[in-house]
Length: 345
Image 1 (cartoon, helix red, strand yellow):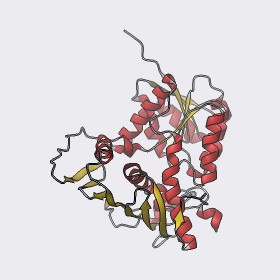
Image 2 (spheres, helix red, strand yellow):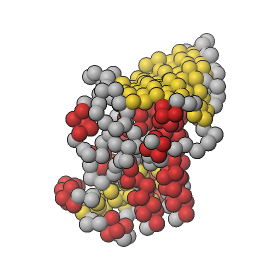
Image 3 (cartoon, helix red, strand yellow):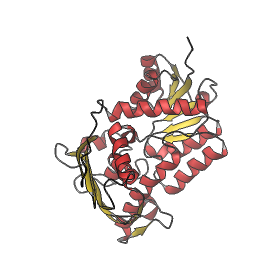
Image 4 (cartoon, helix red, strand yellow):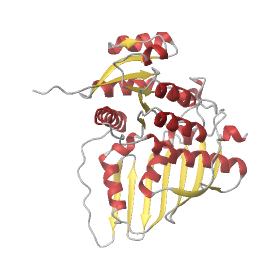
């Protein structure tokens, strides 16, 4: 019987999302969790004890461990760039949580560092991994909906003031880089552009309506896609009891609606398309586990991961473009480099 080859993983940051990564690694035959590091040493010790792995006392110590091939970066967004560059220089591959960065120049620096050091970088977009999402993209790419016209995304969830107060970095420009759109809405932003295609220009308005935070709790962005379609992004963390996430895509020949991660509407002119009976899929942890397995195999097979780091650019452009438009009151085109709102103020 052949032995499955394993890829060694380390985790930086021992918060909530690190638990998802750890469990995903442990449930993947092709991956092995070697150890963890956190700037708060007690968190790393407790985490390591729970999963029976090494607790590293410094990032440098972790990066010198020869058993580790991939580092999962699960720290606050504002720290991602510096850590990515440091990890890349140590010749370790990288799986980084969303958003990759909170400034476009930092995103570019991360990608360049990985290219210069010949290491792989992948960013986590677990909603793309669902079979429903894959099916929906195939339907659109095959032209079943015809020429697209109105393609929108809605994220209406709830975060109270305690959520933002529970960690000093939450709701700040320096570490979060944004609010409802950058953190809670980024998956829907990514899914919309992944399904419909790149955005050419937008107008945006973002503000803190109810929460006492630096960043926005509510945002609206009016989009024009490069294929000529138009759309709206409505995102808030103030929707009482939470109303979920919806993607609504309309074309001249059909309509496709995805509620959370379930296709609830698929209507195509002159054709009856059966929606397959998909196996139950949870974005967390299933999407993470699929990306972890893919990353382990990408390292072994010396190929690009399913979501390469370059894919982190598209949603970041839309989010930062919305913040820029909200600040300047002007339309933002993606024919020029964007600044983050933190840079504009």
